[in-house]
Every structure is written in structure tokens, then in C-alpha cells.
Amino acid sequence: MILRATGLRTGLRMGVRSAAVLTLVAGLTACTAQYRNHGYTPTDAELADIVVGVDTRDSVAETVGAPTSVGVLEGSDYYYLSSKVRYFGAAAPKEVERKLVAISFDDSGVVRNIETFALEDGRVVPLSRRVTSSGITDKTFLRQLLGNLGNFRPGGL
Image 1 (spheres, rainbow, N blue to C red):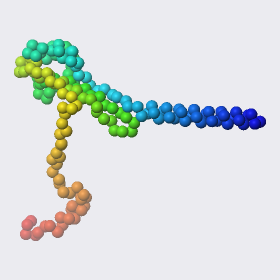
Image 2 (cartoon, rainbow, N blue to C red; image 1 turned 90 degrees about the vertical axis):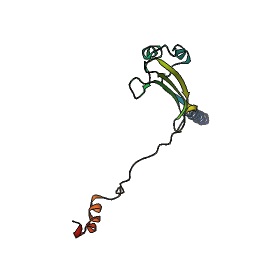
Image 3 (cartoon, helix red, strand yellow; image 1 turned 120 degrees about the horizontal axis):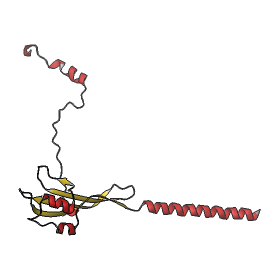
Image 4 (cartoon, helix red, strand yellow; image 1 turned 60 degrees about the horizontal axis):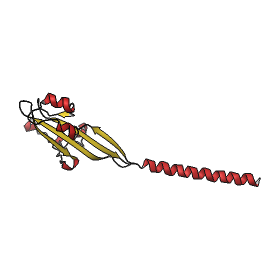
């Protein structure tokens, strides 16, 4: 009987230790940073194949692929954008790498310039809110109607 109780205690201790080790390993694994890549930018070798002053829109699309984005106007520049975002535990996702390749064209559609920008080149642009306040956001329809009752003059009608 004593041997069985000792074996049971030993087995219980081993089970508790195994559970603790598994919990520790699972906890450490959950804290590992995960990275996700978004978008596409051509490599430096692919960009070296584009000749400024010679290549056109069509040849650029054949060489490095279709652009991620095109300028607003017809016949505008090509933009290739990629980013790398880090997800770490419960922390908010953080963009750790961004690359933008801008290929500009002249009026005849020939490559004029190739520029590459990174996350470090970016600037924070503060947005201003230009909304006209109506001043009646907290007033209900009945409150507005009853509030105007005393504002009418018989001579003004």
C-alpha cells in the first residue's frame, strides 16, 4: 500500500511538472514575434533592367510586373509598395519596414525617373478636420421646435 501511494505521488509530481513545463513552453512560444508581408516592390536587380529614357510603360510592366498603384490622372506614374508588419503578443501591430518604388514617366510615356523611399523617409502628416459645426447636435426635434416659440414677433410675420 505504501508503494502504491509513493508511486501515485511520484506520478502526480511528474504530471504537475510536465504540465508546468508545457505551460512555460506554450507561454514563451506565444511571445514570439510574427511578421507579415504586404504588397510587392521590385528588387534592385529588376530595377537595374529598366533604362531611364528608353523603357516605356508597357516595357516596365513586363519587366517588373503590374504596379501596386497608379497615379490619379490617366498616364500617371507607377507606384510599387510593400510593408512588413510585426505582431507581438497583445501589443498593437507595428510596421517595421516599408518600401515605395515610384517610376515616373514623361508626356510620351517613357521612363523619366526611378525613386525608392523607405519607412525612414516618411513624415507624419497631421490631418486637419474641417467640419462646420451645426450647433444643434445635442438638441432633439421637439426641443428645437419649442425653443423657437418665443422667437416670433407679430410684426415680423
